Each structure stands twice: as structure tokens, then as C-alpha cells.
Image (cartoon, rainbow, N blue to C red; front, side, top):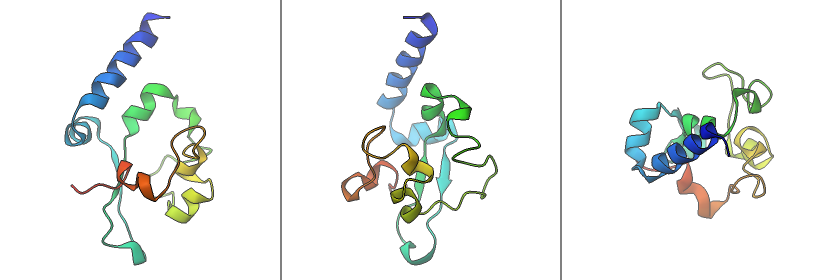
Length: 109
């Protein structure tokens, strides 16, 4: 195993051990505000840097996400249909999006 791969693993494990609040402050996560009838649900937080530890930019950009703030109309219906986050969070590639996994993305500040 290469040194770079080992360092990535060590960094990922270290970051996963930090409280969520620390990750947000350090990593500059992307926050998706909830709109429409779901208003009142906690915003979804996308841990961008944690994904970058494992994947290159081209894994998601521009095929899944445009690289412009506000350009991606991410909704739970779209995710359930396999778009945006749902392209990988399908229960096979990565943990699936279901009622019992809501708090992995939506959590109170």
C-alpha cells in the first residue's frame, strides 16, 4: 500500500472521530437549506472534504453536480430517483437513503 493511501486512511479515520461540529468548522461543508413543504426539517450537510479523501473531483463533477452554488436542485425525490447524492447512496455503493438514515445528513445545529 502506498504512503499516500495510508495517509488518506489515517486522515479519514481521524476526521471521522471528530465531533460533527468540528468537521463543519474545519472542512467548509456544503449546507443544503430545506425549502417548501419540508421547511422545518434540519438542513442537510454535505461533508465535501470527507468525500474528496476517497474520490477525485471528476467522480461527481460535472456529471452529477454542476460546480456552481445553487445550480443543483437537490430534493429528496431526486435523491430517491438516483440523482445527485442518490447516484452513490443507493444502499450498494454507499449507505442508502432511508428514514432510518436521515440523521446522517440532516442534523440539528
